[in-house]
Length: 141
Image 1: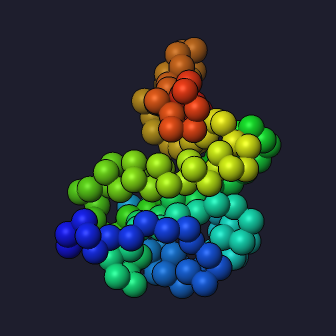
Image 2: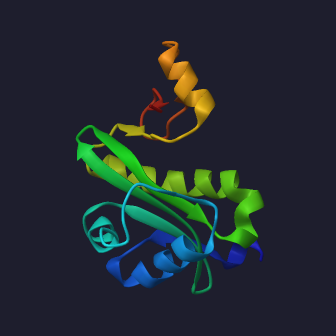
């Protein structure tokens, strides 16, 4: 579908069913919350979604733990969009960053099960990505 048909917007509790559908049907999901916690995730923490029309094909949720820091609480893309996951992540991150900055967040952290990232942390190396949240960087841990 062409870029003109795409909409990236804030997710609300009204989008719970769409997020649950992606969580239940896609293998391309990172999730730090239970389905029972999802309503509060969408109610209290900024989250964004990528839509084709009314169909959600990507989401990015945050979990603010302690200002000025927040954590990525969840990310997912549909099976059909899985080859474009990095492009979708960057577009969602750009939108989420603006919402987090309004709430005083300056650093966004990610904690995952990537063996290479874990090994670099154990060896004392720092893994960092350029951050839209501040001129410095997104710190991954």
